[in-house]
Length: 633
Image 1: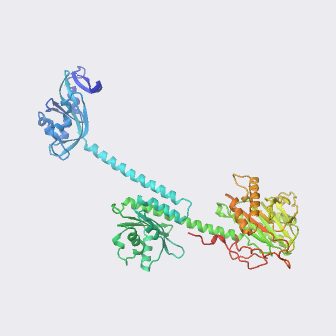
Image 2 (image 1 turned 180 degrees about the horizontal axis):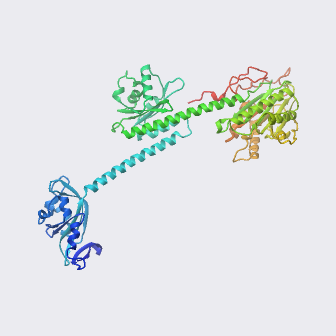
Image 3 (image 1 turned 180 degrees about the vertical axis):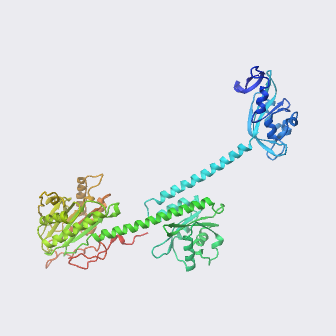
C-alpha cells in the first residue's frame, strides 16, 4: 500500500491522505496491523459521519466495543459538552473535514462520552479520507486529554509555587540588603517595614527592648493608609506588669504568633496596650507578631497586620516572617556586639591618650580620629605635659601598626619618653638618644616617628621652640595674620633604628623663636597621606587650610580651629592625631597686662572623661568626652 501525501490549502503537505493501493512488499494486512497496535484511538467515518471503523485503543478509551459503534453517528453517540450536554450539530468542529475537503483540524477542548456516561476530555486531530482522488469520509485520531490536562495543572501549580518562592527569595534578598546597610537602627527598621508592606501586610511595626532598663519602645511604624497615625504610635510603650509579662512571653516564643482583633479588643487583655493599640488605630482583622531572637537574647518583636480581604497569612508567609525575624535579631545582636567591642576599644584608646594641661595663657586642643577598622585603635598619639623646670613639653608620634598591639607599643614609647623628659631635663637631642636606646634594649616596640618639643619662655613671652624630629612630618607654624611655614629642622632617624642597627646616628637640636599669638600645629601622617594622595600634596593642602582658617578665625578658640581644620582635611583611612597650641599676646599674664583674659581652655579632650592632666597648673581640670554627648534622634 502506498499513501500519497495530502495537500491542504496552498498546496502544503499536511500528512498522509489518499490511499493509492497496497505495497506488495509490506503485505495486505499491514494497514490493519498499524491501526490495531497504534497507542491512540482511531475512528473512521463515512461521508455522513457514521462510524465505519474503530481500533482497539478507541474501544478501550470509550469503553465501547467496535461492533456497537459501527454504523452509529459519531457526533450523536460521542460528542458532548464538559457538563455532559449535547453539542449542536452545526457547532461540531469535529465534522469540519466532512464539510470542506481542504482542512485538517486539531484541538484539545472537546469531550466524548464513555459507555458509563462519564465525559472524557480529548486531544484530537481530523483529516479527510480520500480514495481514488475522491473524499469518502474522514479519520479522527484522539486520546484521553485528562492526563495531559492534569500534567498542565501540575505544571501551572508548580510554576505558581516557583513564582511565589522566587518572590519570597527576592524579598529576603531585599531584607538582607536593608539590614546590612550602613544606617542606624531606626532608619534600618523603617526601610525594612517599607519592604514588608504591602508584600506581607497592610501595616507593620517594630518594637525593641531598650537596654539596660528593659523598657519597650515602638521605634518604627509604617502604614500607607494612615501615615499620621503610624507616626503617633512611635515612642515608648509603658506597660502594666501583666502586659509586660505577656510581651516577654511573645518575645521569647519560638515561632510567630497570630493574633486577631478579638484577642485584643478587651482593654484589660494583656496585649491590648501593644498589639491591640496597633489594631485599633491602624485597623485590621489579624496581626502576626514575630519575635526577634539571637543568641539567647530577645530584642523585641515585629508585628505585621492585615486589614483587607486576604485572610490570615499562609503557613509559608508565617515561615517567611519567622526567617525575617531571626535575621533582624542577628543584625541587632551583631550591632550590640560591635558597640561593646567599640566601647572597649574607645575606652582603651582614651585611657592611652593624655588630658591636656592648662598652662597660664597658653591654649591647647587635641583631636584623635581612629582608623576605620582594626577595632579603631592604633599607634598615633599626642602628648603635652609640664616638666619640673616649668617648661611645656609637646609630643606627636606614630608607632608602626594600626591595631591593639600598636596601641600597646605606643603606650610603652610614650611612657618612656615622659619619664626621660621629666628626669633628664636636657636638650631634646639627648632625650631622643636615650629613648632610642631604651626602645631598642628594653622593649619589643617597633620603630616609631615622633616630634619632641619644648615651649620655652617666661609668662608673657618671648617664647622659643626647641625640638627634634625623629622621621615625623614637620610641625606647622602659622601666625595670626595667616603666614605659614613648616619647621623642617631637627630631623634625625626613626626611633628604634640607630641603636638597633648600631648606626651611631644622632638628632640635631632645632631652635625657633615663636611670634605672639601664633599657632603651632602638630599632626601625624594619617592627616596628610592616603592611598590616593601623596604626602606632599596632603601637606600642601594642610598648609593652605591652616592659613585660611588662621585669617578667618582670628578671634575663635583653638578648639574651633581644630574642628574646622578636620572638616577640611579629614582623613579617610588611617588613624590620625592632631595637637594645636596657641600662644597668647606678648605680655599676657604679666603685671599690668592690658589684654583681656583669653577664652578658657575647652573642657574637651579625646582622653577618658574625668581625668586631669598630671603636672597641670590646674590639677582638677574638667575633662569631658564629646563622643558621649546626647545626640538628637
